[in-house]
Image (cartoon, rainbow, N blue to C red; front, side):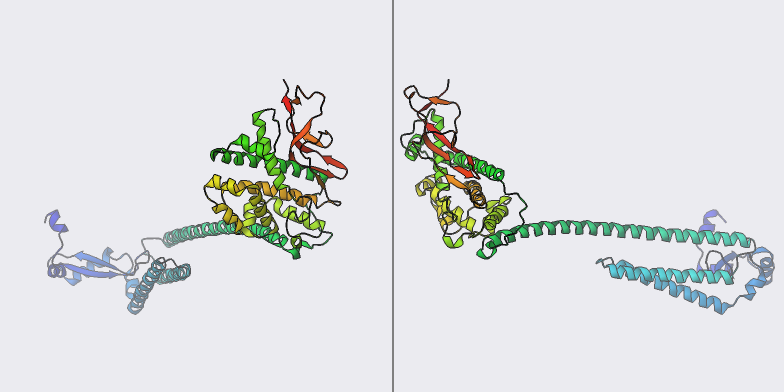
Amino acid sequence: MSVEDMHRPLPLKQLNAGFKVLCLPGICHGSVSLLVVTMLPTGFNESQLRENNSQKVHPQPMEEATSQNPEAIDALISRIFTNISSLKSAYIQLQAAHTPYDPDKIQAADKLVISELKNLSELKHFYRENNPKPACVSPQDSRLAAEIQEQQSLLKTYEVMVKKFQSEIQNKDSEIHQLQQQIEEANQKREKLEKNLRVRGLSTRDSESRDQNAFFPVDLTPELFTSAVETAYKAIHDFSKPLINMMKAAGWDLDAAAQSIELGVVYAKRAHKKYAFESYICQRMFSGFQEESFSDKPETLAVNKESFFHQYLALREMDPLDTLGQNPDSIFGKFCRSKYLVVVHQKMEASFFGNLDQRNFVMGGGHPRTPFYQAFLKLAKAVWLLHRLAYSFDPCVRVFQVGKGSEFSDVYMESVVKDLVMGDNTTDQKPTVGLMIMPGFSIGGNVIQSRVYLTGMRVAD
């Protein structure tokens, strides 16, 4: 017989004729039984087979094989198959719980799989206790091998559990990060709401009557007012730039416009005519400054010093457009609306934009988000805060203005141009005021000088 013939599968009848199947108990590593197929020569009888088997076919003594209970073995096999079926069902449930992902079902199925694995392990130990290892292997070696295999299985189980716990830790870290972001967003919303409530509360008459002993986080000092004066002066200068640029773009004659603002002013340089437009803005923005209502209706004005200062603090750090978006009809909103319509003339706006849409929107109670209007709101905020601060003092700050033709006084006035000297034909005369750029103030016996432009002067060589 060739090697190929030896490996070729035999027909069933030939297999039955030439082979005997023996059942050998006591197989290692949890196997229930082993089928040993022995090829018999032709004419080999049963007595010869038994004679050969009595020598070394069985790894265990015959007494152990004959002493086994077939019914117990059958029951054990039945339990193993039942356990494997249950394990398969639990594993299928575990897979199904992942699609769609359901953490509760995954946890329940995972417990079921572990339970079935434990049952299978108990069956293995039960079989080992009732079916010792073959005699050819020492009990110590067999027990040690079993312990090693069991520990390896436990190690794999622990590795799976560690990976599972690591995944849960990562999920928890991700949840913590998301919660921290939500807390940060909630704090930002809270701060914004607090600012909104402050502004809305200060825009009503009820909230303007606060306790006399209110706590102010900013000290009310003359230095604070002086700083506010500088801010307002800078705001006038900043708004004059886009106003002049818009006039240039619309084709205005700037020389004629400057002359119409204040007649008879002699400028030392043509570039100094920009001060005429700053004076124009100042006169209209500070009109009514000496009144508590600041050109508003008497019924809406605050009645005590603390209310003025609270309004100053509420608006000081806020964007004016955001404030008006929250409450367009507040006292500050009405102030912005009335001053815009005075500063930006109807003909001026029509030449700038080609229509009166923005003006009509403001007159209707709105506050547009156009760049030009936002530039104006910065000016309005600075002047408004200066007025609120002026009436926070007791006694309140007094404002004074300087008219054209007034004799220059270095006590009450400051020239906006430093390098001017008297003209050639006016040596016997004193400098006179041509334009007032910023009013002056008297606070606690101290004077904050008015900013003026002197007429009839020349630039020093």
